Image (cartoon, rainbow, N blue to C red; front, top):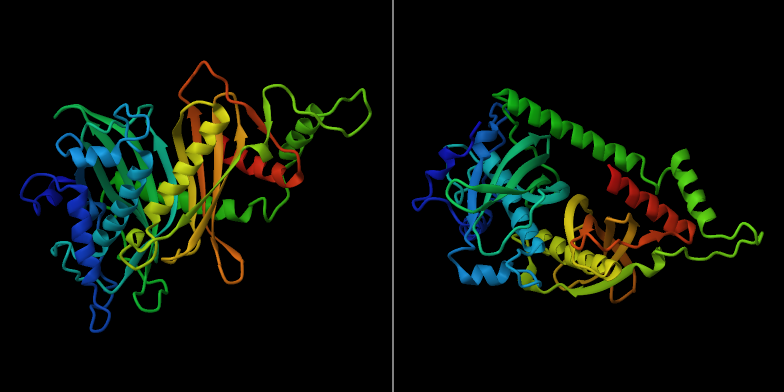
Length: 399
């Protein structure tokens, strides 16, 4: 089913660019009323086709875009971190578009007052391709699941090799939260009208994803003990690092292995106003980009090769980051095989007056080495704390 043609009509020159969408959304958010406002209409529901939008990242015709999107290799490959920024903005657009009356264009808010912020990135699944920075990228998206205040955006990116040749890059699912502009308490979304079997299937998948997130949080290794299988894995690793004939607990590092404590990388970011979002906080897409690039550098340092991202999941936005903050990023390769590396990144804000650190974001990235003939070192834990990180990374890598 094609959701998109009806939404093209508001743009005179074919597809809107991602820059045009961003400018329209800035105008839309700036005009959201906070005094005399429309009330929530409990009798209104919108189908996925109401939010469906297609736009273009015009890489082939805009050299300035190519510079921004080209990665450090210089071989016409796109920066994945910049695409994360675009996905984050696009997800917010789709959530606003869903709540907006279907007959009113974006830029003129006619919905009940709300702000929409990113709660988590549920999953980004990469196709077995590398995005190029010299060919246009088509972004498609629509709202696939709606809760009371939470809302899921499903998005795909495709590379345009010709008018008839669009090749998959990735599929992403972001979960947003709608808030009151004044109190920042949650507010209701317009319900989702399920018109087709596809709508129902997508909604069911969104409900399952929500339940999985709840289950993950409930069974977190910060709250529960490892499973019997996981405890056995840790003990097997321990046995692999000792000499049973010596009858001591002295540990050694097996060949081709690296202690987890030696597979870390840290970064610090000063949060300047230029990176603020529409609400005056640091843009979530920017946080994802710097976290990804820190994780990429960590994976590259471990593997001695250029890594390629293959999966992103369970990115949690726990607290907003204020402009002027000092953001400390701590990256850890917490699980690896001969082909894959699972990298976890924690973002903490440092209070310069007290020295206290507060966790604001957590990120999970899965990489593989682009050099297939070079094996990735196996990271192994030495302490119990590292063991828990190892098991948590393993859970993300094998899910």
